[in-house]
Image (cartoon, rainbow, N blue to C red; front, side, top):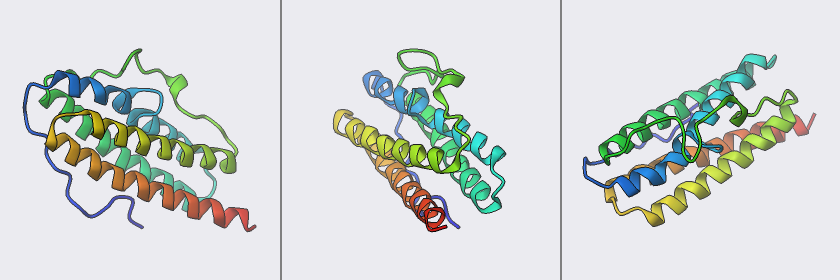
Length: 159
């Protein structure tokens, strides 16, 4: 199973656009961020007794790790510093530690939808064309995650 689009991730050009870098911080390491997603999906995969679900969650977590790296590099290329915090520093309370798989899948799908909306809003507000291209590419992965998680949720709802 694929957890990311096959399209390449555009490189963000080095330029002095600190305001653009700051707009990335919530998606990088805020409440609904790549960092929160990494921790959430990893946790959920660790507690999953269903091997298929474990593989799905870890596969998605690995893509989120790539997004985290890409955003960190983009923040730095634009003149910012990729610290783990937007308006406040990231902490473990920002991850979802639910144990009921139906409940955490519903929350995961909602968080992916929020991530897409946040990226779309950021795209409208940044000036860097190379950053817009990267964020548009990341959105494709997030939409794929919604599809994968929704299909899995539908399959367990049938049982």
